[in-house]
Length: 362
Image (tube, rainbow, N blue to C red; front, side, top):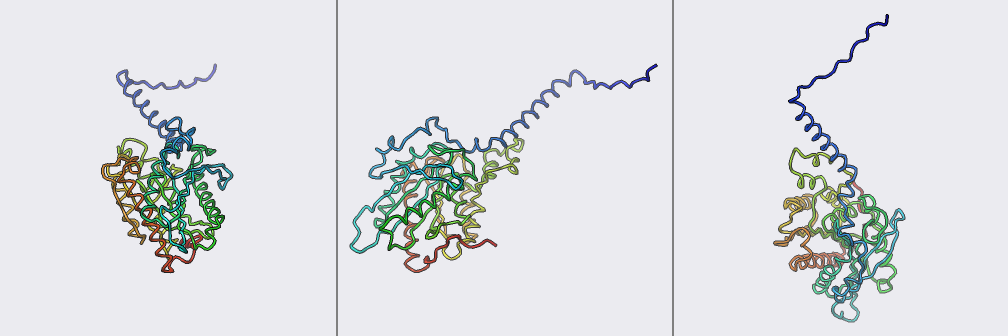
């Protein structure tokens, strides 16, 4: 006779407990699923090159009529990893004739866009701003270089913070080569180089500055931060403040940090001799970035010893700072102030040494 086998015990649940157990299980499953999706698809959530749906098929010619006398062209370059990316470039001559023998100082601005759409729709506003900056500083040759991130507009591959960091370094090297190729710059000293970021573009601008890997003959003179935030972790807490939501607790799994607050400290350590000026332009009614982010970045600059100016565009939403006339004026003033400050430093002999790779961090 076979030995007696123990019977498996079955779990008995009272019928009235089944509905709450089922709904609790569904809630936990949904909560876990959303956490997993947020981590896996964070690049898709942060970067929106397909919004609006036709953004990647837009052309410069569609917007050239609204750019006035500023003529834009597309340039194709290779990123540091070989990815083909696009640039929108405009060379803007002085608005007035300079006196005989007076050199036209070259100023290069590398522009980093926000997280959605593409460069062509931004060109009319960028053109207005650069024309206004010329009016403030008429004897300057401005060259505005707008970086189309990988995965955006006609650039190849998919966007990520690490990949776009490579794109920004490649764009800066292209600017250095462009400057050297121009015969009128043969007798010029080092050009003025400004980095201008909008929203997430501020993170890429400060990333590039904090890395300090500048080509020979190129030094950083200023950063224009338009509607900046401190970092992605802080934005998670701002956008999802409810403690029962999982999103703000997922920061250890972030692959995109865009930490301008930390970058400012690294910039101050790298450029101790001639620290670049920081120019913050905020939206007065920003519905995405909390007002305290601009204040924290201002205090951070003051803490680490970076010269800083802060302006607020009254009544502007997050994407309206560059659209409103007062915002355009604020950005143009920041550009011309940075260019003037750089020239004054050069004339005083304070900016003569090129900080190729900046100072080593300790």
